[in-house]
Length: 461
Image 1: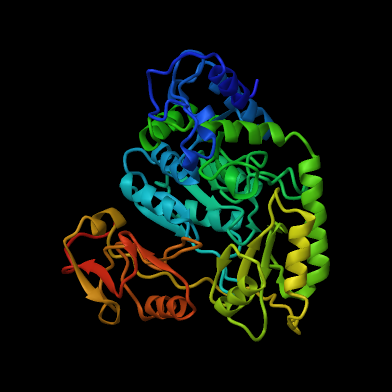
Image 2: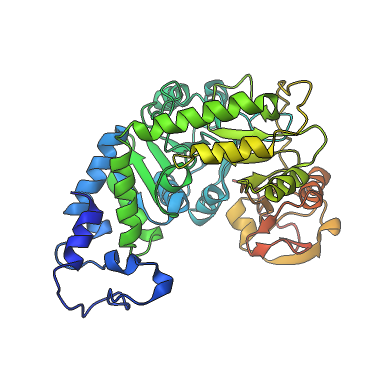
């Protein structure tokens, strides 16, 4: 039975609610949009997300079966809560985490909260500026260099659709007896949409974090944490999720997640999606960059570029023509097709771009990784202060005590404990000049950067 149907049936019992939530499921609060009818708390006949033994347990077992995991957990705090919990579970006791540098800021926050020292995998760069894949050979070299690493975390697919060889990386991790965590926030559809681009779960990832809401028909905030294999205790993941998620999880969100899982078993959902991707790609041709020399690419992502327009100008043109893009980068715009993309959406995009000049040559050759700033202190040591707030143009050479993160995609330019370089400041100016948002740990970048007061005798562990 779907959770949604159980909620509707409970609402129809006529029992007078003398319990949370405060709207008492009374219609008339127009701003609730009718969701009050299925917005419950943990009353008799329902379940408790963090001690599930009824309908939520059944729903999460169903999700595990659909993705081929041993256990699956709903997260109503999105993939962010899933990443925080997973890294907490894998890096207990402040053990080092081997992290792909192009990780979302939630991974960095998790390492900071767990006081876990970071070691980095640094992917190659596409000429448009986004990160490419992580290889098994890079993981093997890093693990052999540092035997104290407790876990490996990579992002696959990336925001831009680049897919790493998760099966190969998982094999390397198993050789060393350590777990692999895959941030697949943008890849809940992998293995369903294109059988040639499988899910990290089926590729042997020990923990996979997936946002259902990003590409699938679920409400914003719905995610899934899938655990597979013997290297990770799923109860440790469950305990960590209980730490980072609310103790009053939203039943409308959980009903949305459960309904989405049931929908995944209908291939018609994906066949329509495939058709729209083919139509768009056939029509737009070389306007869409396709990363080469990578393990795989998720073709549902549309990397739109124009030889004469910056990303900001291209995004403005799209909005003028009725299209809202997903992300604006300095030199391109990212658009996402999703399970909800319909023929009329494809028609609108194709029409909006019909007059745009096509690039003459593809951008194919990968570039070397961006040089990483020098790590002087562990991030958690640097973030603890003391600090000064200095104008960005006076910060070169100082040790960062905060993050500088273009958002989206949410990948930091510098993290606490790293020395701020001219390259970092150049990237910062480039993002700002192209109209991109940059966040710190305390909100939008306002011209100043928090740095350590003085270089302390503490060193990176």
